[in-house]
Image (cartoon, rainbow, N blue to C red; front, side):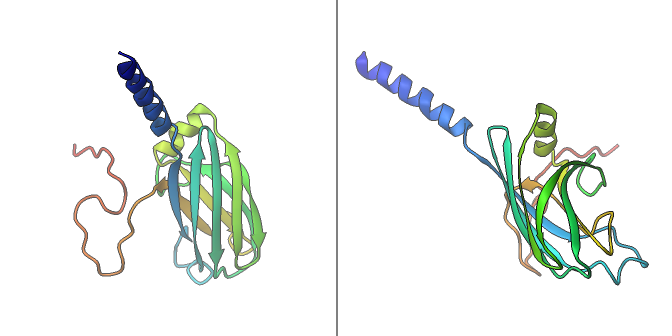
Length: 165
């Protein structure tokens, strides 16, 4: 009987620990929006990671190759990946045409839901592109295929519902 109670407590604690594990996200920062007029100035790239522990999101990333000095970075909310949105909170930006972006944000329930439904993104504004030079959506940690590597299944974005009609 004592062993049964001990095992019950052990599995209860184990399930709680797995529920409380940190969620990890990754970001690929790339130039956006892109058109013929902005193509010459839209250069650079970067990466970032984000970790959610409880309701606190910690962001750390780097970028390089901007055509002009970086001026501001923020976490923004959109209707979905690739759709421009509105800033939620400023992030710390250090650097010029290359640098680092960091931040630690306590998310409210609606922001947590937005994170988990791929609606939060990092935007870095520059002197030459003040309304967004590099953008990148926070996506669940996933494998990234190399160039010319064939992949099967939903490899680029984690699967989500698609209506056909």
